[in-house]
Length: 230
Image (cartoon, rainbow, N blue to C red):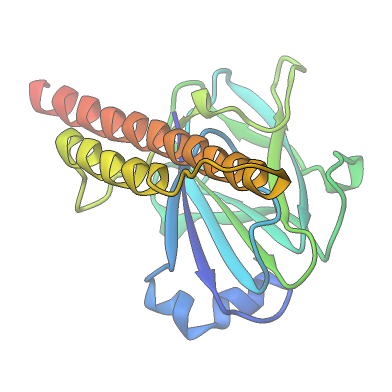
């Protein structure tokens, strides 16, 4: 499973309210999107941006869950404890201002009762001003087991009105990889080695991002197929 991530650039401030109040966010057109393999963002991607990570959370056990968060800067976790409708989501946890990449009891939620196998709308709102940036959400299961951050196996990607086909994804991935590969240049010295390493790292990052996109597309295809056969 995967989560869907949206990013709005060029938004000042370090609070989630700065994101929610901004016209760009209200318009609903993010500057970039991606799929994430769990409830954790990439680290140090920029300055003055806002992020929304969301999807369907599917608990493996019934009972009371405690959620955990760490972030830099502010982060808010919201869940619809009744089902999948985003409009009924409510805040269950907030990490105000900047922090460190460490789980802390003071950043743990009150008990949240969830049912095994039921789908719940899950959302992380994150705002970055300047400096380091990251966010992650974990949980304690009713059995007492810790999963920090929450892995992708407990999520389902949200359905989008315009879904990409496998052939479209394949061609898009091929074009991006070829574009990056064309930047590979042979040379001597430290500068050439550094440039080669950076290009290879970019190739790896591109491949990983498409892995998540293929996974999400397959999930949506499988769900649609299952629904049509009911």
